[in-house]
Image 1 (cartoon, helix red, strand yellow):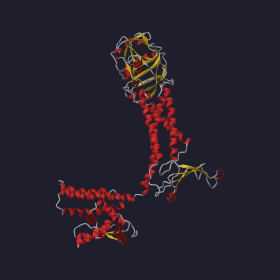
Image 2: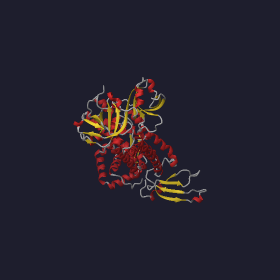
Image 3: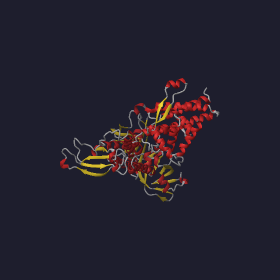
Length: 105
Length: 495
């Protein structure tokens, strides 16, 4: 996939969310307000198209904190390039995530 | 005891487990692990909220519902796209619908035609397994009255071990006089008084019996046409020929299933049984004594019994239940005969279809066989109802109707099976559409190291069918060739 790939609004939201630090499914849901039935299939498609990659947390870390391990998602180079182009396409979306990051700071 | 909290805790996990069934097996474990992990965090987030237990669990369940959507999308992405697109062609659906329509029409005709309806209904006689029609051996047609009355009287006068009771009826033709008017000549069965009681038949609108006068029972048609359905006439005196008789009731079409078609039945009272001449020829019904030795006779057997001249005579015995099974027996026999004759009219193989897993899925192959099976399944009732309709639509002697049924059932079966195989062979195995654009290929004079025959093509672009002109050792049956996707652009509708 190239950086010229055109994403849907939902996919762009999820990419922005992951880029902003929501690196697992439930946090993406909370950030975007999208339901689980939309978020998880969209993340799978983004992973299939090479915009994001996933990795399981080490079991030992999860065991120390007495919780199940999580599956984390990160943007790939292609994903970052697509994110840049989607910011031009959805400027309000970029502003929204930029402002939410400021609020967190 | 299961509390609401425990139940709510189990429910989301059960939902995830159910949804995981949709996920392809190789990805199921990882998929379930991720959703279970996420559910744990959802539950933790819910615990922090001040909402009621119900509200918290509703959110958890809502989260899990998304798992079904995710699982379904995963499944659809895994399935080959061709499986979703290919549907049976209109011609296949139309073919099955036409067959179904023919079955419906023939079955409706069977229900509407009174003779056919009566034939299809099971025999209404009580104990028909022990009621036996007795006729002299050598009389090929049971429809002809061939038993003399004196024969039955001889048997009645002797100690019986096989039969407990006999009834006799003789066909005669006489007009009936009602008041001052005469009916046309009617077919009348002059019978012993016990005929209908032996059969267990009770006449409609029947009145009490008069032991001194014969009782006349009439068919529904005569009751309507000659007596105008006037119930006040029941019990009145009519004249049958020169004899007076009392009108006793009506016998429906379904109630008379014995040999002979009659308009009326004249039951002689027991006191004047001698009124039927000893030389009169008719039909004899015997009631078989239910016993172990007698049950070994089966449905049809030959019996040797004394005759009035002192010699032993040979008699054919057939239970009425066996007579009732005749149409079904003819149907089974002719269908089997048609199947046996089928190889003489067309070749049985459906052709060679190379197995290519990537080109045709198991469900498509199954659909092709199901289409073939459906045609056979629909043809079978069509043979039965169609042959009965043609055989029994008009009032003819039962023996004639049986001959007509044999011929029609065999012909419909033979040509029907032949059509099914020929139709199946000229259909595309993928979309089941009828192949088109036949093209002659090769020359018969140059068949060495080559072949000549006809090529047909699927209009959807699924493949080509090669049909050899002359079957040879290297090209015996027709061959199907799947076209690869590079041909798709040639066809208007391709997959």
